[in-house]
Length: 245
Image 1 (spheres, rainbow, N blue to C red):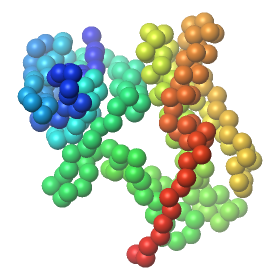
Image 2 (image 1 turned 90 degrees about the vertical axis):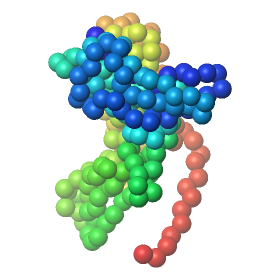
Image 3 (image 1 turned 120 degrees about the vertical axis):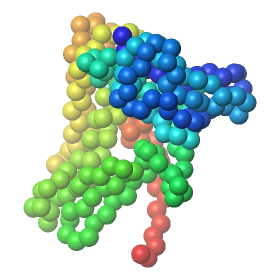
């Protein structure tokens, strides 16, 4: 069996638990009942134990990170088990139901995932890179627009965020309803192909034998719960400032 390991519920008053330590490294073998981690509320310390034999395949919290009870903190599964669906469920739970508060590194910087903060850097030309925590990828423009076509355009990057958000939200809604859904693919496009965007469309493709009513309900709730698609509906102001480097 495979399962998501979650932050325990300490008591009714506790809103968040903090990870004190991992007793097992990611990739380490565990037996049912083994201590995986130590977590703490303001009132007490608790042990998180493995519910079955397996391997600690994923960890989602670092030491000093805090999260609400029920938040995924790891995945335990056999070494040869496909955990794609569990990873999607965990990502959806973290993204749509809770907010992990990252602990500080020794240098006083936030560790781990970027926490909704990115930096775009361009040195010259139309090509640049995006930095988000420990992750980095490039962006560019077509040659016809002065670029070198070595990366997605800024609009493509946005569409990628929309498509990935919709896919995770769809997986979350399907799992929540015990619907049998295998692969999920989301195609997003913006029109016209150049210049200001006037229209955005997305198609969610699901490999499933569920009836049309169930699928339509899953997709509708997924779109409502996708924070990126919510940006398209909200009249959200941009707080823009500048400073000299």
